[in-house]
Amino acid sequence: MDTTDLSHNLIDAQIPSTTNSDSALSLCPLVIVEGFFGTAGALLWGKFEEYMHLDERDEKSGSTARRQVVFASVGPVSSLHDRACELYYAIKGGVVDYGEAHSSANNHKRFGRDRGAGLYPQWSTTHPIHMLGHSIGGSTIIKLQHMLATGFFPDAHPDMILSISSISSPFRGTQLSYILGERLTSAPSVRPLSLGSLFTKVVHVLSYVSPFLPTWLDFHTESRSMSLYETSVLELCGQLWKSDWAESRDATPFDVTFGAAEEREGEGEGRVWGGTWYRSWAAVCTKKSDDGFAHAPILATLLLPPMYICSKLLASFDYTAVKPTPSFIFANETTPRHTSPNEVIITDESTTTVPPSTIPPNIIPHNTTIPISRSQPEKEDPERAALIPRVLGEEYHANDGVVPLFSQWHPLACSATRCTHEETTLGEKSTADDRGGVPEPGRWHVVTLNDAHHLSLVPLWLKSRRQREFWVEVGGWLRSVEAAAAASERDNAGR
Image 1 (cartoon, helix red, strand yellow):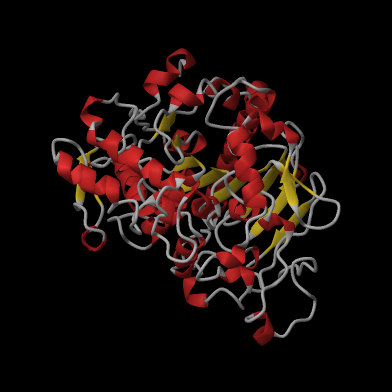
Image 2 (image 1 turned 90 degrees about the vertical axis):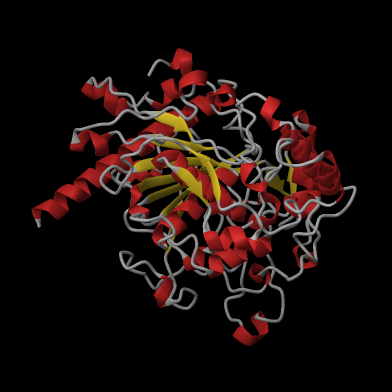
């Protein structure tokens, strides 16, 4: 792909069909999902693709093949459910169907726009894709895989997604939602005169005049009839006073609350699948104080004052003020201890916290966990633990200016999923390479990046060393996944 035309041919550009079954697996397309208020696509993300192909294996083999990369346009402020529906039809093609039950419950139209032929209409288990999401984009991909697994889409399967990569995604919620406007005790209600309330008004006004806005500023609000062609000025004023959209359970601000995240986890969302490889990049722009778990933003964030202020507020947030109180305040969650660079901590599923009926049949649970003394006493009465808040580890205070560290790792607690944690520096040899370069499916491979904030890697392309090294590693990771998947396929064929 000619990277000089990146800003034009990556946004909703159809991926060419392939007739070679080997190439369908060896160079699967990469679909990128932007985060909250992300609408610009490659116009903002820049010419990263050339670095994604700087893989030493390609250099040794002399390969000049290039992976197809596209941005899938979804509602930048819509709920995870609506975004996942829009994402599916953006790739597969057809008219967006939000589902009869969901649309009725949330008072909006069932059908959205016609996505035409789609970005990759041959998408299936035999033609899977890689997916990468920034911020809420990562959560959207997890929601999509859950809906693929639960039969929401016809003839779909979670193995249609070969790999999921996330960058600073709020899988388990973020306190920033409450800081900006969600009421601590009655979300999704929004506090008047808060920044969240102001943002809501901006969204309504932009949606109202959307027919005159550039195509890259697309809010996908046609299902809610928010444009001037479908609503009157009087109705707009009413929504500016009290928004039916923003103060509902069907919007991004509510979906990133701790309560909403726990509801999703309770429904089994976020379970790992044996045919998918998972990787998350977690950023931290805070440092621990010498006298305990308290964190404060690093001085470099002063270059971005809003990020510095938000990071400071997140680090000092009182989780017990949220009602209902998040279960992780009381739960016996196993979390990885602090790791030195390139040190790996592995946790596996625990039958004490994962109902057998919710474990995918192609994942074999391992009944071992690593207890972490700093987050949980060695011996504790379960009944007492259910009543008395535990001492939270520093991962609940460390953050990237938008999302706390523990929420960036993966959906579910470490004791309820399968994960490998490492703390490393971009450009260094990963521990995955030390183990033979074969990543394991059905397990989260978590990489923590220190001295990085929510926007350090994406979306704003500055061509920094860290950004270049990041995309080189992404390219290498995708190649490793495809090699592992091809090897597994050959093994299964030989049986």
